[in-house]
Picture (spheres, rainbow, N blue to C red):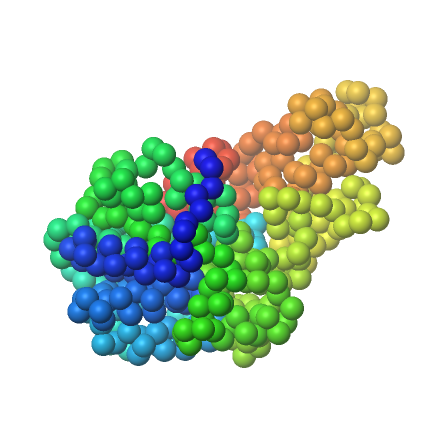
Length: 434
């Protein structure tokens, strides 16, 4: 798709989009995270809402393990838009969130009452909070451990059915941040409102709703955000100021729940910026300190992985095992025995001893599992391959028992879930959690 160049600045274009929304939709709410993009979006929307004498609603999902500075900023935003605010939905419900820093706990549940003694923060007590004690009775669709991505769909549908008509939901994403976000805007097959490309009709299980997400700042860049903050004197989260002082590039500053695939890259900043909170975060989410130490390496299975320079694949394999052993010794031992059996098979069947295994072999042979190499072994560990299928192993009863033992020992952790890629682990999900 060719790039479209507007004959106006992005600030003017965004205001015109807000104008359109406030004059064409029946009701509106904005999804806010406390990050720079959604904060600027909300404050600009409030300016246009005042002009049209409109009221707006805001949905903010509190993930519990957040920067305290983010909470302060959210409270500031409430005050900033109070004159046009119809309702602020401060959601503190037990939802499943991605934990990309742990091989044992791929998901964790925020605001889980069973773990209240290790919550990072006390439950907020302001008038806007929605938690398990005061959840609206109509929210029969909410289930404990519901995925965040599911929640926002059902929330939008409920909001629309409560208010009627056609609903617009403001999303502060920018297409230059990721290819997926770019596709969200440029997708030709999506259903749009009056064929406007910066809108997307929301679906639930392939069923259309009367909710349209709209992206008023999709064509902004990071520099545009900070230019607007400066020239328009907008409020912003002070975490960004601290991240900047700490040397984090603008492109890597992420403030959503800190243990996701993108946000974990800045996880090591959490300890430096809010040391008072760090110890509680460390106890709350499994693998956080591991993420703090290794967040810049391929240990956490980054999309683009590289072993440390000057280290062979054999040395790197040992490094990975030793790193795992610091936090989950049972998993280290599990991988060690698998690797040992792998070498024994090659020696007895192929006549290849451990000392003859090379660091690298042609990738075509490694991917086809036709040859042994230390790179093949290291990659299996990197990808959290519990069964070691990349080394030609398959699921067996002994390994299943190990999973049950780990679940028993780490009973407060969610070991596997239905969205994991490995079908054998998915099949065990119902058994382990029944």
